[in-house]
Length: 290
Image (tube, rainbow, N blue to C red; front, side, top):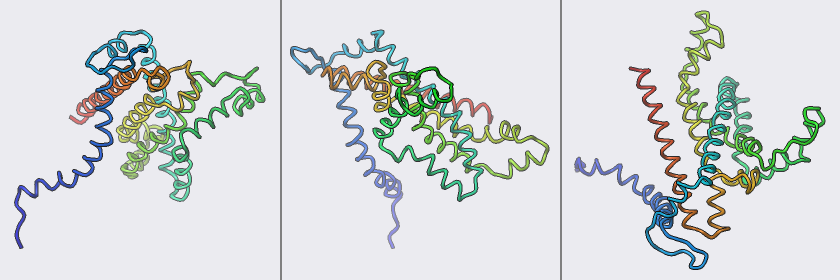
């Protein structure tokens, strides 16, 4: 039997990954390149979209205080949602990890439930719950916790509540993956040496699952920063985030080049934040394990 040459063997991984690369190039890279090219065009109400290569749209996005406020609101909201998801999802993942297999399967289905429902249906459900006459306000008034209905709709509070509900499962899955690699004997050793359960969690468990906590927070942050349906329905047009603003420019103002520039700036800003975050985490762990 003829032996394979070293060259053919080294090209095998490229051949195997070629179909996936082609699919990504056609369905992901090509649309992004088209949006980037569109962002350099110009637009006026009289002439419509005019081809060219100008930076006017980017100058407007980067220098106008209106867009500064929208980007600050979007990333501030995403950061707060990531923190809340970490506070809720990390203990939830630990409890899930400690459950018996039968109970774990049932509660895992409950946790992943929001991901099995259409984002539009899920958001409309929250709109019903958070309305002035919704279940949440009715319960607050009935329990005496509020004198009158609380305004959740078209507020940042309502948007955060709805987004936390759908994004917490992503954090739970990331932390749970780290917990599954944790050796139970390590916890048992800490308890046998006289440490309290809280000390074991703080000194042994949390440091070992910190990569899962950090990666889960990053996933939640990026998904919250690019969310559209929930901020659009719960927040409305008065509480704009970047995705909603780009949508308005595309379909309401018909200013596609400006909408493309907004989307491009959001993508670049998110990528820069992700890379900086990963770099900071890598440096931190490199210092710890040196």
